[in-house]
Length: 130
Image (cartoon, rainbow, N blue to C red):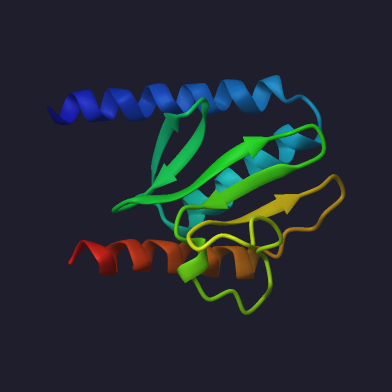
């Protein structure tokens, strides 16, 4: 069973690699940078491929990564329940559950605030698993 899960993770990682390569402009670079920050924030993060987009999970869904013409969007499944003192969330603010961050060409990523947000999302997942 564990081998199957490892195989699925490797397959998802390859699909994410392919998506980043396919986005040969700033969007691919941004998605790659965000992916690296997520992995640095949580070395145990699980990469998945669902709904035709990259998904990062740890004890539940953390966020999805979508690429659009003018933005790379990370949608946090339980974003509305997360504290965001740095004000990273700038999209999907009207909902009761999700929140998103739209990154546009030329945007600078606040790596410290982003890492804190990723870790908070994981902690929230772990709290709800108890």
